[in-house]
Image 1: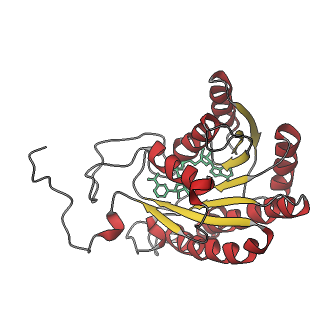
Image 2: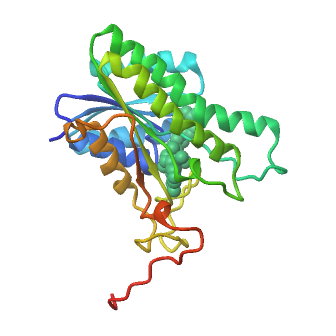
Length: 258
Ligand SMILES: NC(=O)c1ccc[n+]([C@@H]2O[C@H](COP(=O)([O-])OP(=O)(O)OC[C@H]3O[C@@H](n4cnc5c(N)ncnc54)[C@H](O)[C@@H]3O)[C@@H](O)[C@H]2O)c1
């Protein structure tokens, strides 16, 4: 087991990518703090982990609220005994263009998607440093942080910020033995903020299908495990090859008849 003896916080673990990260971490031996602002989802995932023989606690928290984060950190430490790993997975999308989005929607999306990984990491890293613990942090970014999109502007800007937040946190926390990396998905499971996974949704990538949430979870697990012992401040695209494609390339068309 790759995370035996470790404790992990996974934010936005009530659904989709975060849910699979929490479940995979538990299978790999970690005790998991299943953090979500939706109580029903957090409880359901923690219950599934426990029913499967794992160790988990559900913690309801709005990760855009520093006071709530302080309570979440205490609740996690009380229930699990410490924190070795933090996965900042929460994001919301505006799904608007520059003329549609209001200033309030802009601020909210930036706060939840860009500021929250800063708020949460600041408090968790403080705990790690004060307890002489070291640790690992993975930010879940997005291909949207690296390209313009017609249908989102605050989300894309926030994810662009997350890419540098990862590097800045990596530089500033490495002196304390805390290693920070990023995994950047594209088109995986249900779209951000949505419930339904449409496996027929149109994709433009080299694999020819959308990603499964557990494919992101495996990459995040890798970044949190000893297998990534010489990786720091890095971004791993888990995107079916989308970012490798020139703008007008066609999606992968099999030439082997499969
Ligand atoms: N799904 C994709 O195709 C995709 C593509 C690229 C990047 N990503 C990234 O992957 C991560 C997970 O995306 P997803 O699609 O699984 O998200 P999702 O919308 O399916 O789930 C997010 C979870 O976070 C919770 N949440 C939302 N705001 C919160 C807050 N303020 N505090 C606490 N919990 C909150 C929600 O209740 C929900 O359970 C995000 O960072 C997203 O940007 C996803």
